[in-house]
Image (cartoon, rainbow, N blue to C red; front, side, top):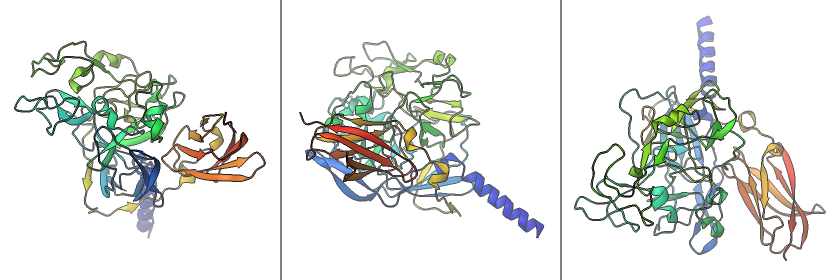
Length: 454
């Protein structure tokens, strides 16, 4: 009997410990909300029939299994620049390690396709767009307009630069329907230097909002199982030094021609540096600066470091989605060009071992006070619409209601989990003061806005 009781206690303890592992509890689970998308020329989003975020999380003693359709709650599309694909149902199961390990051998290169998964079930790709400068016949392959070839792999085109015109407001696009980010998943319009105006016509948000005053949230996991964070963290690896922008140790080379790599290797000549092919157009335009590691807020060659984070108070290896001082994405963007750990994640057709289904308890694990959130409204005064932006995504839906100054309800909407904003059409409202009530049914706050047509 004592042995039986002990076994039960050990089993309960194991489950409890497992359910504190961030790779189990951090996913945005949803089985009610579907995605939305824009098509070119239509500024009203189309509601899809595909569920957004992650539908199920299951785990064994060694792995966690994430079931997802690969669709976010934020509005996707349109994808210009010749990309006619739409974000489509991936109906996938991803298998990630519960306890990732450092790779003590030769680092594993990142590859084309999925190299990680964001906590909303959307794929992470690395820097590449799958095209290089020339093909095996020495014909141009990686020009501004992509011919139907992939190239010889010498001068590899950087997707963030070469495919910018095809990204939606959330800095993402699909490959054969597989919607993915190559970079920091925060909307273009939120950068300090806005380099794409797609949000002006097709407004959306992204997974998170950059906030220079707090440690960025955990936003995903790489295929070696280690966590991925946003752009800001603790200056020092031990959690001290305040909040700073965590910086890439890769820098653009000082070159005008493309004939050698940073290590001096002579290679097939690429195009000279120009306005058409600026520095940064190819991955090989960058070099890794090892001396950067003498400064604690710079990252290693994998774009990560061993450090304390809010989710890992005892420390972990963590990747960061790097940006420059103007919050524009900075190479290598998230992970890469090699993994720090043993790459062991994979996409599976089914689960072949005994697993436990994780049911999240939002109130216990992720409860926050809405009154403490950074909330902004714009434009204010407003004319045609009012947008409300919260400073961080929520693990639960947030309900926003528009009232007139006398308390009459005029409209209501939802900021869905994994999203950060909502809109109200105000074209039919009179000039004057209005109130926005924001609540998650556990805490609430109110914002005053002004409608002014002239």
